[in-house]
Length: 609
Ligand code: ADP
Ligand code: MG
Ligand code: ZN
Image (cartoon, rainbow, N blue to C red; front, side, top):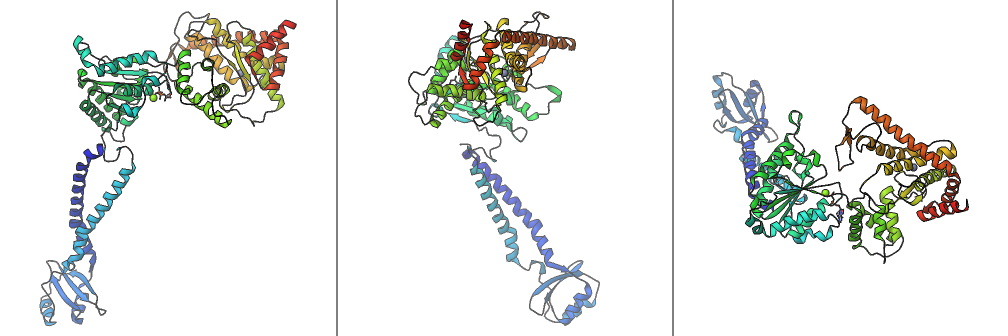
């Protein structure tokens, strides 16, 4: 629809360019061509040609003489020569008879001149026009070279978005907050009566894949009003000022269509903090300024609601977050156990499943997974069912696809020597045994030594019975001890250590570090925040907030915690070395064992011993 509005303007611009080109041809190119047609020569050549009777036309100008020579083969050629003060020249020419003095030689070919001056530029412009038009129509959605400064927000109306709140599982708090906004758009009078100002904007914040974009689409589906959707990156243009123009255009459209919703996805692309003197990005700042101005400018009672989504709220400019702009912050967190279960069910509706699938078990095995990952798990399960030649998804499909999403596909034909396989088996049983022998540890769910495409050579899955929201010091220590269990088994049995523990080391260090710097769980420091989380929703990077000496102390403390756990794990394994041998042998045989099989052997052994 931008296309139509633009067209008259484009034609005018194009016509102006055409006129310019024609003028250019007339004033520069035609004279140049004419000049090229005329050859320079010397005076004596002129005289000899006159004498030979080859000259039929002469034009005497102020400082030069133009003459036309007819060659013996009948062709004519124009020459120019300097004019020399020669009194006899006129007589000489006159004596030759039939020489035409008057004709203006330069305009010898009016048709040719006409073609060059008028037809050629027109043809040229028409070709250019066609090429441009074809190039533009190849681009989709009306975003094209000619619509600089136009916002290309997609407009959703109810039918198009096709999503409703029913498609969003879990996230009840977020849905509630958004429902109020939808209600406002339906009955603005109810709110106006009491004098309440409605939120102008709401910011959805949360980790990637938790359903922020989905929620916004659901709002569009529920609200029954026009819904403009644009991604922050679409404001970032090649030319300075274009982003700001787009913002202006977007809000103008929104004002015309009010009541309506404007959704800006990934707003951090344009909403980053402005950081004074070192800013090299004028374009982004202009765009942000325009956005701030527009958000202040429109009438809150009119019914334009701005939604935005980001997973980096800490990087947003404070001006954007103040009341009157995005005054509501709607957290969209990773789903809890119940949330995961209902997300799995929502997505399982789209596929054929066998009766009696235990979604709760899958949800328990996927602690920390986002909605997008869960959707992916369900889809992987369906793909696996097809691969297995089944026409519906069964429990094992889902269980296997959880592992695919966590650790990648099985590498069935990876070649691993028997000796290394043995080490891996002991390593994994080491983890499982240490976990089982501690009371603050989650139960073992599955142990496998089938390598995965993620690089894991085997792993031990632990699944909590219920949802955990707190981490106690004992649990943290138990986790670290369990992580050191793999390496400990290598040491106890083979008296060696391998690189297979690198991932465990990383994880253990992260937990121990957090215990010291953020949870106040160490002996040396009290409740002091030594590190702050900078990027809460994207990996949770931390930055140190302490002196260098303290940093050194932290390292010592972290090492201390881990080595204590390591000693502890080794002790557990040495005490249970018979079970370690038996379980490792069993695992080597089977490659994958379940938590129940593991516990059975563990307990049976205790009874007979
Ligand atoms: P983001 O928060 O990164 O914008 P999206 O909204 O794009 O995440 O979510 C990606 C996909 O994950 C959705 O299309 C949907 O299939 C799935 N998903 C995420 N959260 C949920 C949820 N709460 N309920 C159902 N599906 C979800
Ligand atoms: Mg998104
Ligand atoms: Zn390990």
